[in-house]
Image 1: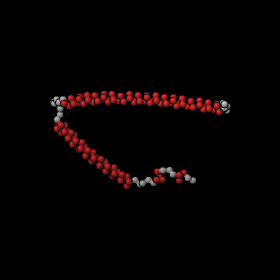
Image 2 (image 1 turned 120 degrees about the vertical axis):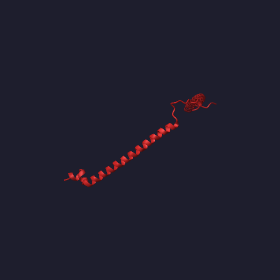
Image 3 (image 1 turned 60 degrees about the vertical axis):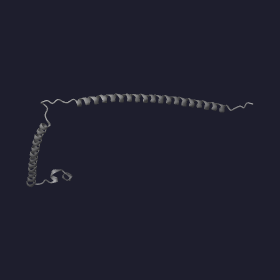
Image 4 (image 1 turned 90 degrees about the vertical axis):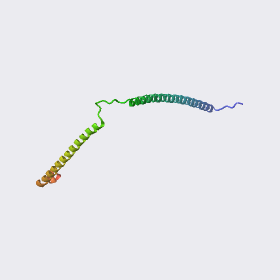
Length: 147
């Protein structure tokens, strides 16, 4: 005995099955995409790491080369010639310059003190001989224009 199902129930079951199948396909497709992206990411990481290791090796070789070059330069004695000044000569010359600059500083300080005294005396003279101005004489106020 075959039982007859309602056609709307059959259609609904078919639609649900089709929707589930589409959902499954999307999930499988998304997983494949993520797997591909992760493989590419890991491959890029490996390439970057290999590139950085090669760069480190190159820089270490360059460092060793520069260190050896520096040691060679330091080991070579600089020949002493007649144009080379001794440190004592340089120190004496700098001492003379220091003494000159110190005496000039003292002279300038005295000159500044003298000019400051003159400026202060002039300020005092002006204060004594000139009457103070009132604020009203300096500025127009609304009082001057009022009725």
